[in-house]
Length: 340
Image (cartoon, rainbow, N blue to C red):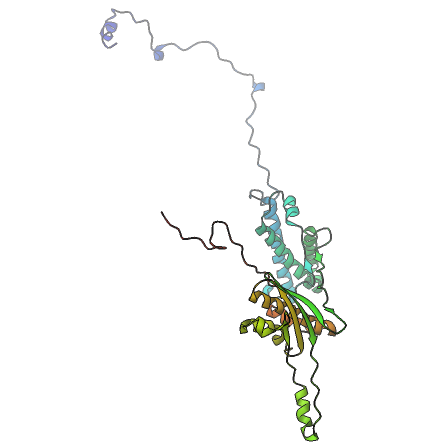
C-alpha cells in the first residue's frame, strides 16, 4: 500500500474509495415521534418505610420481641423506682411463690418464623421471669404504675402457655412411718441406693440414788444417748473403715443437732464405698425432715429442712461417672501420640 501512494497522488491510478469523513451525510429524513407519544420522565417511586425498625436485621421478629421486652423491663424498673423512691437495683423484689412456665421453645420458634436457638430463648424467658417478679410490686404501688401493670400483664399473657404461666410444683411424698414410729426413706448417689430406717432413741432413765445425787442424775438424763448405726446388719466401723466416710454418714445428724437422737439401720446396695456413704446420708437427711418437720407440721423456714437444704444433703447429687469413649484411654484421657 505504501508503494501505491505516489501513484494515487499523481492520478495514475484512479481512487474509487472515498474516506468516511469525506462522504456526504444522508439526506433521508429521520423518524420523529408525535408529541402525544412522548411521555414526561417520571420520578423514581419512594421506598416505603418498614413497619418495624428491625426490618433489615437477620431475624426481625425475634429482634423486635427481645427489644420490646427489654424496653418494658427498663421502663417498669424506672417507674417502680420513682413510685417507691428507690433505685432500680434495690427494689424489694421477691421470687414468685410458684414456678413459672412459658411457651415451649418449638412453639415460640414457629411463632417467630424460624429456628430459635437456646440462648435467645433463655434470654426471652429470663426477661419474662423478671417482669413476673415485678408484677406484685407494681400492683401494690397503686395508681402510679397502673399503665405498667397493664403492659406487664399483656406481655405475660402473650408468652404464656394455654394453662397459664404459673405452674404448680409436685409436692414431695411424705415420709412413711410404721406402727413402731420408724421412718423409711431411700437415698441414692451414683449407682448406690440405700434404704434407711430411723427410730428415735429412748432417753435413759435415771437410776435410783440418794437425794444428794439427784441433781447429777437429772442432768445426766438430759444428755443424748449414743446413736447406733448398723449398715447391712454390721456396725458402721466394719463397713466403712475410713473416718471420712463415717463422718459423711453422720453429717446430717450433726448439722441438725440430732446426733444421738435416732438409731439408724441401713441396707445399701451397689456402687463403691463413698457412693454408699453418700446414699445413706441422703436417706438420713430425708428421715430427719420427716421426724421433725413433718410430725410437728413446721414451715420450710422453721425446721431442719432449711439447714439441710443449705448444706446440700437433702437433694440427690446428680453427678455420675462419665462413660469411657471409643478411641480414648478413659472418659477424657487420650493415648500418647507416637509419630511412628
